[in-house]
Length: 211
Image 1: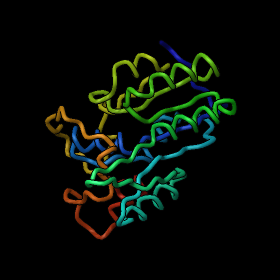
Image 2: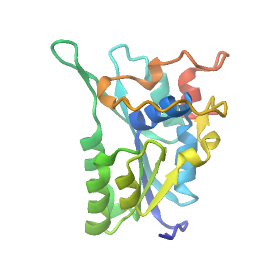
Image 3: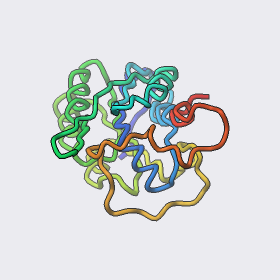
Image 4: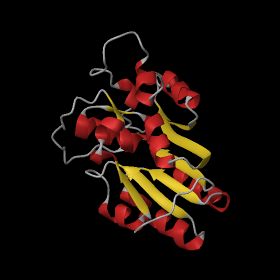
């Protein structure tokens, strides 16, 4: 379905950081350029808010990454990882992200969800039919929910041009892993630095797309 994107549209972008991180890691063994994701999704329109939902681990090694996001105009909402008896870990922003989009819906013409998580399908439908918002999704098509793609007014597939959205992408796709890791395992984007490019630049800055 053709949609209209014009400069005066008020846009809010809500980023499921863990979802995009794990997709990039498993599909392409690369990191997401979050600055570029926001730029492409915005498409020259009026940005009201861009919010990334992130997880803080016990070590707090993610501080540099959070600061890098802030420098490129992306707000961060941080949740501490929860550790239960027996060592189980949980970190989930789905409800918080949904509440924020609903709270801001009356101030926005377009809501963009940067996630491939099918759990957001009811949210997309609610925003479209109750608030009349245009709802767009940007995510990795190879790992995104088909129902989410169908529910949205527009879907931007990062997999169609991964080089434009990824940092450290060498042009080869990794073998897809069916057991796709969820944010509940507490795996933090900032903890995985084994495949970082060489050099003295802060890996958190590289991951965020900060130049």
